[in-house]
Length: 303
Image (tube, rainbow, N blue to C red):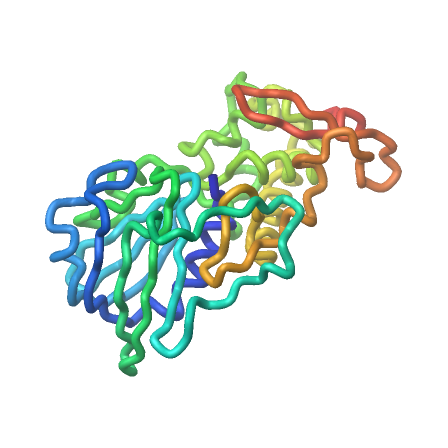
């Protein structure tokens, strides 16, 4: 499932086409995705101007003049494709396929929602949501997106300076679950997923198996560890966004090209390979935690 950097990459790809544009027409080629489309879905979108395209955790938010807000989730295989009136589908970067990329269908049978867009200058384009597995969804929020049940209760974003060592201490204090499991709790930190938690823990030199609450212990060592972890989380997310995300399974950007952060993975999906940390000498191991694969180096991630 796409994680925060992938969703942010999609948002940035859609933003130049959608923000300030008018939705001239919408096609819904089936009655539902994961959930049924909202009542009067087409009517409430048609003719509206898109004032902003945002992101909260792994959700896209399309703000419409006069409301409502359209909340979109990509699910496991959802993607947006941009086509312009004077060009065919924006070219993909098939010559640069990442090692982790798996070909997916672009068949029109999986094109479930099509937005016909008119820019302020009159240029026309189509933005198509394609989702073979139909695990994505589109729902309306009548008020601020954070009040919607899907977004209410989400934790702090792992971007910017709000996430620091002291905030981590307050979030994790008293928690006896493994550190990796706690970092995946969306009620604490919103948008962190399996790949980037593994990468951040490796950067910080922390074991995914340690008790989460120990990060909040008193003393200089614990403070250094939580500060390092906060910095690693922010950095790995920023690096992944800059690289356009990671192309695993179905994920693809809005122009059809692929993210490249998978080429920078230090631990994820590198079981048996030598650890790349200078002077470590260990090897990457794979374990299963709560049904999810965890990749780490037992040698340099002892603490």
